[in-house]
Image (tube, rainbow over all chains, first blue to last red; front, side, top):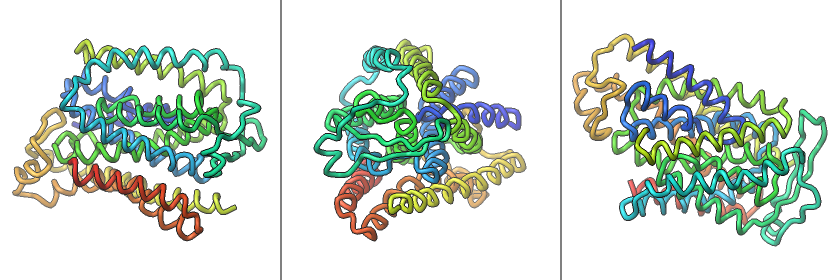
Length: 278
Length: 115
């Protein structure tokens, strides 16, 4: 039992570090290890993954809020779309076969990395104008980049399309319990043209709320096992703490590169689940 | 400056939630290692949280304790949304009082109606 706890804590530390840096939960690492190594039922693995998402979110966001890097207003506004999406996902789960999505979304994810790879050397989007919604809600903001040692101001555009992708992100997390963080980052970076560090940290802030809704459902149905959840939470909190320290010192290109790797890993994992390898 | 205050206050809520969860999780693991004889192991599923607590009725307080850090962890982001409503109201930012209230209502809907 002790060795099981130690392995889970160590894996969760790694999941927490990566999750805190690129704005995703640790499910990508935790689910395959639990299923393939310990032969744990996939639903219980997803239950553990949801707990890890909340732990990453709260752990990382508390540090990022202190350093004013998260765009709190944009995050709160976009949460409307993600939470409605999460509920829609839970509601249509009995109607449609979510396994089809496991083949569709990897294609969407991988193709959406193209603009990011193309612009990987571009540090910050320039000449972006606020659209009507972000003007009305005053969503534009600034943050101090510790790596560049400069104050970076940014505007936010295409808010409506961003909201739509956020809805899809919520839908996915309700249906599959995976992938909600990557879609959030893509919506903020690719579409709304927010700086990558603001996108990943704001995503971190948001994923906890999206996951909390489904977590209650999983908890009541008995899919959250404390034997797994407790070591996961311990590891994730430690990892998220380390991850936030690394993000502050990292360049935008570095964060983007790790994010693109995570997208490919998530896509492979989705296909593996679709083929029942996971 | 107002936005920074808000960030710090909301950050504090999250930090309290995480710290309490962290400490209670460590205590929980120590408890598991000491008693080590429960009806559950890491690879055993159970029908629901209620049946799990019911099946361990001989020492219910200890086993129920293991769920406390999980419940606090899940409650932290929900509490964060609820307190944000109050903080925005304090700053007379009514646009965001409405936005955050909508998020809170959706969350409550999913917690109580769907589950």
